[in-house]
Image (cartoon, rainbow, N blue to C red):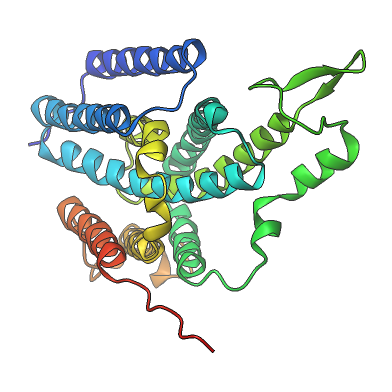
Length: 328
C-alpha cells in the first residue's frame, strides 16, 4: 500500500528548493559571467543528481508510485524546458543580447516561468478537483499542441518570435537604441528611457506563458498531486540556465527533438482522454457512467514512453546528418 506524503517532507522540500533558487539568483547577480563548459556541466549534473535524490526520498517516504510519477513528470517538464531553450536561443539572437548578460535574462525567464506555472498549477488543481470532465479538454488540447509541434507549418519565424505585445511596446514606449549592461532603464540626453532589455523580458515572459499553458496539462496527465506537479516543474527549470550554455550550438543539431516532444504530448493527451472516459460524468457520454472497458496506462508505462521518445529523438538527431545540397 502506498503511503501519503508527510506534510513535513513537503514543507522541508519547498524550503530547501527555495533556498537553492535564491542562491542561484544571487550568484547571477553578484557574479555575472559566461560559464565555461566545465562549470555548466557540473551545475547541470548537480541539479539532475538532486532530482534523482529527491525521487529516491519520495520512494522512501511515499512509495514507488509517487516516485514514478515525479520522475515521469520531471522528465516531461524537462523535455518541454529544453524545447523552451530553442526559443530562448532565437530570442537572444533576434534581440542581439550581449552574451555576458544572457545569464540575467535566463534567470528572469526562469523566475517568470515558476510564477506562471505556479498560477496554472493552482488553477489546474482546482479545475480537476471540481470538474473531472476537464481531462477531455486537457487531452484534446495536448493532441492539438502535439500536431502543431510536429508540423509547425511555414509561419514567418520573425513574426512568431515577436508577439503583439512586443510590437505594441515598440510603438508606445521610448526605447534606447543600445543596451546599457543588464539595465532596463538608462539615461539619454538627461532623461530616462527604457533599454532593449525590456523588450527581451516582455518576449521571454510571453514565451513562458505559452509554455506554461502547454506544460501544466501535460504533467496533470501523469499525476494529480499539486506537490509533485510543482516540484517536478521546479527541478525541470533548475539548471536550465547552465544547460543553455552547455548545449550551445548543439541545440541546432537536435532537429528531431520536436518530434519526440510531440509524441510525448500526444501520448499524454490520449492518456488524459482515456482517464476522462474511465471516470466519465458527462451525461451525453454513456449516460453519464464511466466506460469500464477503457484501458489504464500505468505511471511506469508512461515513464518508459517518455524516456524512449527522448532517447530516440536525441540519438536520431545526432546520428542522422543532413545531406549536403548539390550545386546547381
